[in-house]
Length: 350
Image (tube, rainbow, N blue to C red; front, side, top):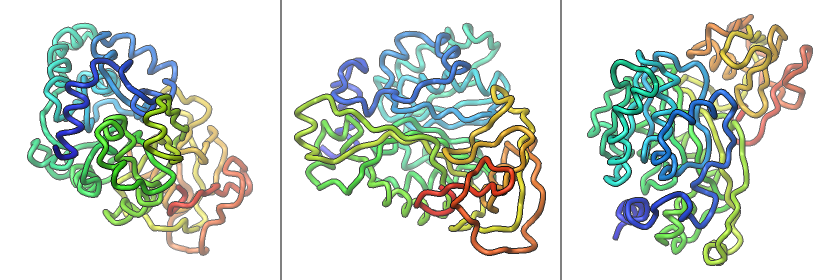
């Protein structure tokens, strides 16, 4: 049985609900903000009981967008995103597991009725996240790609990321939660069906993840948050023998970014106009924009807020005509005078 067959069997036949999981890796650890928690109450309990995820990959400003959910399962995230994009948007869920898709498809009509939509704005497709072309996803056809604890299950992660950036429109975004490890796992862990199904066996070493994104052309990704995964099963703990695992939510844009933070003297102002963010907006875990307060930013950060769907909510002063060297990442990102971003290793300000 190959890796894909092991994963499909685990999610289609071994697990009946999220209560059957042996760790917290594939169940949501990241708390939902209030405006999203309210939307989950509109989603049928069967969808939620059989859904597995490790985060809340729901960025802001989605009205009218086309969104692709990789490894959608029973569709919990698809139905939440359906409410965020509105009736004029579209959410496509792709999954390889028949049992999961049966639940997702069976609820389309009643969920649309609950949302008050006159027509479905969701579609579920059986397919593989490594081959989005066969699933009908054309080049530059999607505004946003999300995924909730699924990419780790793929045997060919580099191909997954290449496909993601193929289908994204220029300025589009990948916003996803997944499981990572503090080391490279031995082969016996990578092939173990329980570890694979629990989202641990396929977890990438975080530095290899950074290198893989760089290889496919994404030179700067941003971490939103991170939490350590609690391994509650002694059996599983013994198998991984000391390895530590983390659930991380990250974002990456399809933009011509540089691989380091470069300083062009640019200043960003947040207008306070994003829904649910009247005073502050967090681009990532170290860029907290306060309404009306100037923040010095590197060129990558400037591009992320002026060449994407976030553009109407920011004002950028300055351009890239004059270069001042590397951006100083040692200061306080909320300071109106210094404004430097606090960087962690990984390329750019990520």
